Image (cartoon, rainbow, N blue to C red; front, top):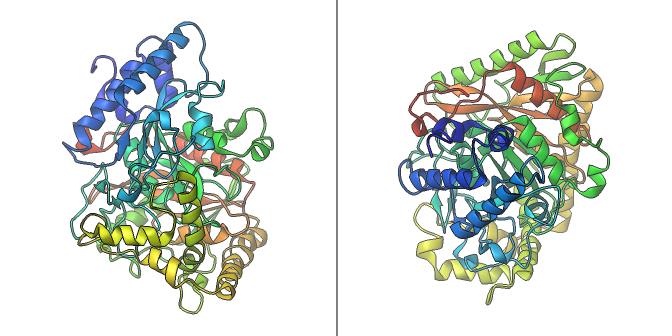
Length: 525
């Protein structure tokens, strides 16, 4: 296999690079699947012990499907850019029963749950009856939501703790600490960075795609609320959750993102979709950069070593200077500012917690009604299951199901819920991004992804929602952890975001593959 696909290629090539090898006869989809499975076998439960996979489509089904796609390619029928390319699917996104994958949400209570059909996005990228796409599939997820406040990112009862492909998580690591892989789309992010597949689907309510994507050195994108079809996808809340993509390149991310769009939103794009906007230039963009000393997780959320914080800021400021150098036909402003995320808090309450506590019961019970697990119909049934299986579901270090308890037994009042939603819109949009863009004539807001901007993105999700993305800006030399640059735009201006990402990719050093999975340290691709 090494002669056909090297470890470095497996860790670095996007679907376009793999397609070139497939088209040239240098690789088959069967060989690609075998290489990915070998990498999973090497590093998921053994080796680096990444623990990113909850379940995998049975090998014989994967290889049969890959062989069928190879035969089609030989006959001159290539269904799409993703023809014969593996994809990881978060275990909150339903897959049809014939794939023999339970949609578990990481919970033992749902380990035998088989959805009646695939989620719409899965059908689009995998259904052999559709000319637009053809993919083999695997499932991954870490951290089932809603669960609890104290449970670590990347942990689930079924799978245990996921590790970053770049650095192992410390046993006493705090949430959002340096070795935390972040979540809840942890398995999807880690799997793509580790060579399990070149791209993945995840879901996000608050940072759940972009934060693990950032720490896995990937391009990741959470679209605007109501821009994508959420049919067949578990939602921890009604107003916040969105499906999005993680990839090694902007082109892959653009293709995957437009596939997820509703028909109405896709019809608003040109025939080429987001690909039309991958100009590799910053021309016409008007970019404002937030001050990292104001927008940082340190020190209120997580304590960082001053040396690491200094290196983070150096990466950020270097990114601003490089963009200025290449943005000769664009406008760049630093610093700009918006109200702090703490202004979102309502009477001392975290607004996201309020929304999820109010909406969580209905969202969960809607899902249970869809998957129909015997003996599991209500949120209280699940709370009881966790207590009855306390050693597995609520072990030491993860003995917290507060979100479930709050949603079931102590939800906020409707008046509080409505007041919080109003405040979220006012702070994040009216007095935030909308005001900034209007007053300073901007169309892109850039910031450290290691910040509370994920709260602003989530808060803007009420009613319409603003998209957020991350891209690999560099690696913190002190520990090798990737550091992401985040961007946001107003809903409907995703074209500008993909333009920015394509220009970033064209003018910045390549992403760094995980050195502990490859012999050459800090190997760039």
